[in-house]
Figure 1: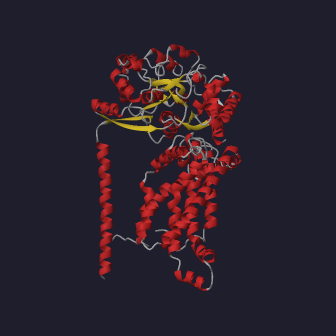
Figure 2: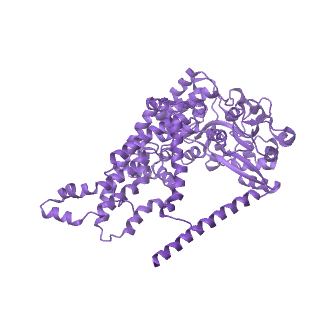
Figure 3: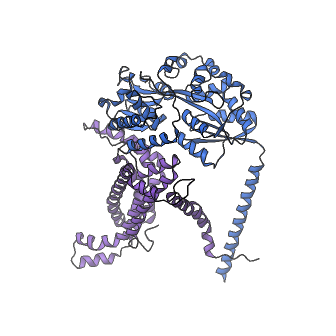
Length: 362
Length: 276
């Protein structure tokens, strides 16, 4: 009998626990729903905006920012099209933005609401017009190039002045290639002398063939910081990286330099757009305008060290070492044989991913 | 008001969890795997046939199979003698074994893998020692060998524990009887100990092989992006929104898992003693 009595007590406690937790859940739910602050949903690359800027914006405008990050452009696209979350503003790379644009997933901003647009540099706007000719959709965040980061004590500047150094048997196991299909293919296409936006499958096959031939020489396929660290730690002689990595690598070790090969390269542009189904467009515009303020852009530049498109912010920098950095601020001559990636359409995109898998599986 | 509670009711939180995170996704994979596209829901076997015909997929499957088999065998070869040793220890306290089991899990998985990478790298600790000793540096980083090492580190406890549990429950009188009847150590091991420990071995092999074959995180970190396992292809397909082809491949992988389970079911440790 005693046992039975105990057991029913256990039951009662169980039921009470369940009830209490239900009440708690409901309470928390209402509490969050009731908080009156306006919300802004932001989707950005990982570690691509100084978190202080977000909290400053929250304080200044009395709003709440829900900030999500993604690793690669393809993840962003999957996230946005899955429809599970709605975002106000999205930051991504040029060809992905073009894809968003072509699939009618973004909307134009109202220039009157973003007066700070005037702070953007002409150079950046020229590149931007390659994807957004009417300047209706896109607000640049950073731009830069793809080039070779190398240890100048092991490789000469002469050698890395051409992409073909990456095919040299001599450097077997010392090369890091980007873990991104378009950036890797860029190298092969440039060596073969083809357009980096080619849709010709024969040319793409040839480029893939070349990358397969190169694979035994490649130590690893890495991106961003991981690629930079290989060079900084001395584990590899050269890596194909985005220009932003160059400054930080050079800070860590002044023997590490960055070269834009003479065949030309890809000019990349990461930029903000407003999502088609943005829940709060006016706030989205306020946010984008805020990011274009010189002090804010400068702050973010000093956080990431990728080339800022904000001329007014650049004018605030008085550090000669930064502004004279050729990797970060290439001169206009680069436009001669370099261009931005265009979105190539679903069919070629699929073809790229097929080739990339083939390269990876060799 | 009387609330009727049976003991079964206590399982309901997990049942809800299971429906939401195992059953429903499984159904979704089946639907995607057997339909043409998101918009065209007519039945097809193309996803599976194409996935099985594709040269890249076959290569990746072969590599996955090979790597997980090798990892499983090495785990077994390491775990079995250790389990015997633990069993012969004077201090036969379970807490110590549990401690051994849990110890590798104190280290965060990502850190573990990053550390292995740092050890194996060209200018890593291993090669530093080798060159100091006047030997040629090894190129293990970013190769299948590195992945095998990572898998062994990650899955070893799942091999050790079931084997230890079964061995520790073997009736000592059987071993004594075998000796009395004139069998030497060698014979006793192969005729008595090993057959009796087989259920534990099979549990261990399943628990290592099944997760290893579908793993992609270890390959991603230790393969340096140079190697493609089945898990990586599925991940890429889903990332690019190719849910149908990705699901087709996932179904093939599922078949591998089911075959393994069919081969081992009935032989594995039924008393549940292989679990803690």
